[in-house]
Length: 73
Image (spheres, rainbow, N blue to C red):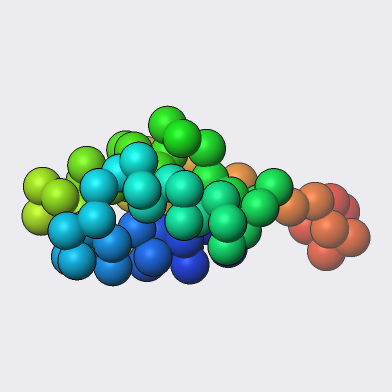
């Protein structure tokens, strides 16, 4: 759902809607599942500065593995 909200933030930026109003609209749409104010304002800034990608940034380091019966042996 975070990706969906980031798409909506990007839409708001492209339509000239400020971060505060964007947060208000997301809270109405997603209620308790809304991104935090910090996250909304950060993504809003990124899109305002020209970012196009809505996916998370790639992280360095080892990937997280899930323990299964197949890989625990």
